[in-house]
Length: 546
Image (tube, rainbow, N blue to C red; front, side):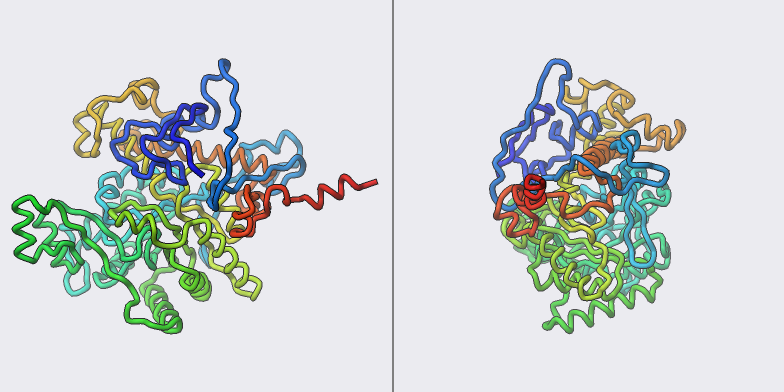
């Protein structure tokens, strides 16, 4: 299904071509607007409704649902009943209102980690864009009460870190990221630190265990949703490329070669791509992979990690089954399953386009395999689905497709946009902060100034954050974090409204019966009933009743 670039009803527009998530395929940190995610970071829940009330009427597009995608799922609604109302609430009309929908969730095997929304971030690792806007991301997630993931290679690419023989004695960038989140952590959410091959060699797990203990969740990693050969970043300094090469990374082209150095000096080569390594290359059977995985989990537990998660990408069915089975057997706390297509780094473009299993196919099979394990008596690991989620309707579809195993939806690019936007606004309003914040604007564009010229006027959730933090602390809260809270408020309210329509007043009440397929192909691939088949037998029994 081709998505429209302009939504006249909401007054939003994509700068580039919209992906399945509704975000542009290329999302820019300096964008002046105004896709739905971008604009919701300013006006919040107001964007749930058509614009220009009192002057307009509005009608849904006559969308043709073509092909298999999350956009070919629709959300079911019911005309009677209720489920999941909280303590002290009854199923009368005064209590069955959408603000009473409980959005909190939790995950974990023995220790439960709570989240105020069924959301978490994707892995924000060694990419420069993650480092530049980390304060906004981390503080925004902490205030919102959702988990954030520190991705791979953060220590390895940090020039200020000290690593000797696989032991880290200093990791200032990793410390900054963890400490920033923990400063505002209030018991909801979590800080998750991810390991890849290089991180394991460098001793990241040992460093985190010794310094932070059970304050962090440690995450093993199998591949990545957008790429098959490990994480990538791009650097434009020859000295930095050589540093990364000496740190043990694969750097392309090789800066150690004289001809490459000469080409760089002459301007023919302007940048270098740093790659991570493939994992498990020494293993050639499923049994060996399982044995190696269990040893890794046992070792992390011996370091003191009480909570361990696994991240896997859009591999085929064999690897998907291994991830679910092994994570369940090891009693991990969370398994994130990331579909194809996204990326916050410098993944090869055609790899993002062509490699791996698309999200909806991968997630549908994940449910099937998890249900098989459960039927066989296994306690299935809690799941998080990632890959193309940005708006509240897609969040509900992902939760429903994987219910009851999916506890969280993992968002990458969508959750980063408010961080970019807030930094740009703060830099424009406070030029002395622009360089430190990596703001890209000298003045506010009309898309922002039309709302106001101060943070109090621009951000719909400014005073909600101020109430939580107090006036004195607001000076330490970056505008990007306020923007994230504003967008999260819109997503939360939208989820509440859609769930109330499905008569579900708590997130864990979502079932696969709360969605249906808009075409037969999607029904066949996902196991989600087609629109006209859903409850059709019940409908006919009503008609034939005497």
